[in-house]
Image (cartoon, rainbow, N blue to C red):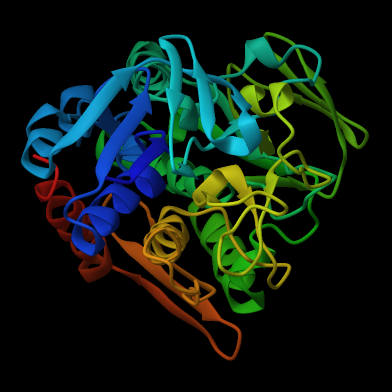
Length: 375
């Protein structure tokens, strides 16, 4: 019986589990992650405004794994051996006949003073911290921004920052205390959200002007203090700083012979195969894939890559040629807590639809439907 090890418990890893079990009902599947739980990161934007709690977004995986007959090892990956056939973990060595890496990436936290900012996409605790800080503030300046990985421009999380920005604005307006706050958006990019497409940039900046959000664009970041964002274009005073830095690969990659991109991710081909290793695949934020420069680090694309990786790995183990690829597309709703802007992009077309309440409810409906399969 072929043994497959999947690393991670996020979008890519769990989609791979479902796809592998469907493709090969008799394979022995082992999932390796620190905890047997799934955190629905897209919902973090609603924690500061009270629409979600941490428990809403933390899904225990034991029932799901039991239904699919998947063994869980509570541990962290630490290295690889025997050309990928052995995964080293904090819980011991795990042998496999096929390996799928879906362990995600990590944020680059090298800017001086970054500890004075809150990194909102790092997890539930950070989102709850923002919620508590907002509730305690009588007024002041809130500065929110993001940056990328200079070695791999696609490795950034801009979309969620726009959602925190617009969501907090909407939240303060509902509380009738927006006039006590100044909101400032900052980024080294001159055209924020450019990966979403030119129309999206125009729409995002128009929303900021409409909401009275000040912008500080196109200036390289120098660092932070407890009360300042420091850039080469000047300093921004702030009582609360939210910042999403660029991304790079997981630390455990450093203890392996995995091929790495300039930005630190695992290099893979269009079929999600890791370069130079047999029956080793990668999907989601952990990988660096061929494609257009706007190709996002996004849950939707992670799911598409995971399905292709799972199909190809199952094919190889069955003695067949791996042929599955995935659509390169961007699909998201930039939510403002009560309405959302729809953005879609592929290699031929780009679509932006203005903010509507319908899109907010579609996003919430998708969350319910997506989490239902793991509950």
